[in-house]
View 1 (cartoon, rainbow, N blue to C red):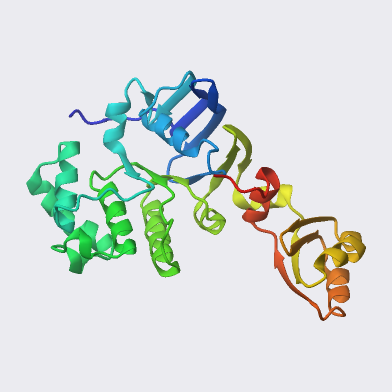
View 2 (tube, one colour):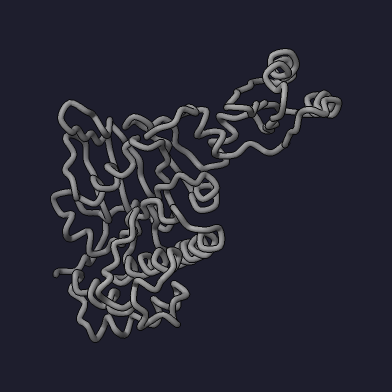
Length: 312
């Protein structure tokens, strides 16, 4: 395979007014965004919003019906095969080959990039150390925990020393310890100058990792910016969550009056305020209600823009 020798664009990925249809359904509807080199860009959205289709379009695995895509300075899908030589992909579901050991999975995968086995074997120790799997070099895949498999999938995505990583919900199904370890590894990659494109349903993950992000719904981009910018733009500074017996009556009679905006989900009332002092004073005299005061976060933005209804 020929190597990419130069990249003319300052952005690692540029998506401009891209449209994708499947039959009569418009899955991606005019989305535009750019991912600067050395940064982490997040794509957030409910199930079915178009995130995974957007990733497939950016990788050249599907062709857009309109718009243009540039990946590492190369047009996609026209030169997607060449661009993908410098790309690493962590899919939603681990697809590690169970017939090979941990190290063999890395070596065999390296062949897809034209990397000779001898060179791939030289890369294995550093990749396993990065993934905290040095002691599992000769282990069978069936003996690994879910967190170990996810870390191996991440290490495999680095076998070709990519410039940009596509991460499709990289920590779904992991326990908190495994999630934090992967977050640490991803931060290390950014410190090395790698570019990350991330989809996730964990808003705290997006806040921790993303320099910028776009929220998409029904195939359209509905917001874009740095996490703290989006929170400041769309949500009041403080949130008081109230729950307990009689929360509905309290919300109608007092909560709505003392809040700038309120929402209710099940037995929990969400009160959005700039200064929660009056609200907390009222709640202090209501022993039947429990409450939690916190700063507004990215999840509040996501819920406000996309709604609280369940998506399948």
